[in-house]
Length: 607
Image: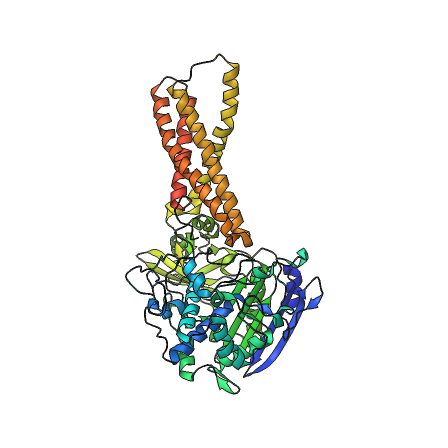
């Protein structure tokens, strides 16, 4: 299966490790760690970035310090910091909120590190970048946050008196014998020669820059761990045995039970989240898990707690389909195939389709967005592309995009078997929904956690705004192109004096060109932000400011365009010129609406 999947998904290499009852049962490398040098993937030697699996080490460190009485899960985090996380919603943030991703932070990328940036301390990094705004009251909605893990890592530093990478090395990695693992950046010399190259696709043959594989180069607590399959096996075995390992323990059995127990449940029927791990029960088995994704590296760690089985996989390529591409399908399909073979689901009778299916399908249909999202900056416009559309089909089923299950890479159909309880047609998936007063307020697939999927108000929907914006851009383009053409025609005709009406007409055309420049500027900025390394580059800031300035000019031009409409309609003239003045004004008005609704005009640069 693995060689076939690597070839089909255009991925360079993979490592798979399985542990059972305290020993490594299986570990194997596939394909290449470095294509150019023909270095094979080796689970014992190849060092791979595991991205957000790093967070589980951060949470383990937090609970070690809680056990020692140096930290309290339910105290205001500001009591442990030498700077202040601004208050919001009248409720303080606690370590428990950080560990369950319920602090309410919006998604930001500006705090991530540009490739080639010089290292700085974790504290300096956090003080340099303002905390993301909060869009939910703490403890209410799960919204996965890298910043929350960085904050927790700095609290570990403050409480222990050790730098975060040093603390993890001394209290987790060294005791477990994870000799080929490190949070330190730059990569220690002893490990550098064995670090796997990361690729967009294997066929490209060109590795990504080393920094591109590290989710958070400076904010190490969120995603900077480099490790091997063999080292991760030791870590999994310790967590599967209540923190115990040969010769010692990470913490007490009581602390281990506290970490593994449900700590937050997004809604009734959904998988709970533990303190630092997500739940992903499958085929009736209790599973704690965490995955990790960054450019060129995608890892998955699954712990069958009651069976004492650990499963780890990692690929060093995004594969076909980009960052959210074949790699997701690979790891999902691989783990499910493993479970279906060795831990099959007991047979159960098929539930009939509910009589309310067609009616409820119409209620569910619409546009949704994830709780893990930006809300106060221009990235809000970029996330329009991440909206999730649910369609009601004629047979009473609903259809969701492939995003909901990366394994199949195609839209999925779901049928209702109970009140708003949807089961996958031809598969084992399940959607859990929360409905109030006949309206869906949130839902998520039962085997996913870390975010909530919420309905989008129609006025902010992509279905409304993107077509309108496309039409408006077309109108502005026609107005802008028509300006020199009409000027040329006037020069060939009998000259007429430039009166007030002509001045307003010219001002409107200038406004149209300014609006077009504004849209083009943002298109280039968003392309740079979404294309990789430039997404974290502070050199973009002056260009973003310039685009903002053009936007302010476009707003002024929109106001002038309505003055032009008033002047044009009050004076004699063709109905065509009057209609066109109104259409251009409406296009500029839509541009202004879109700009403020999706923060293309904003004073913020904390994106």
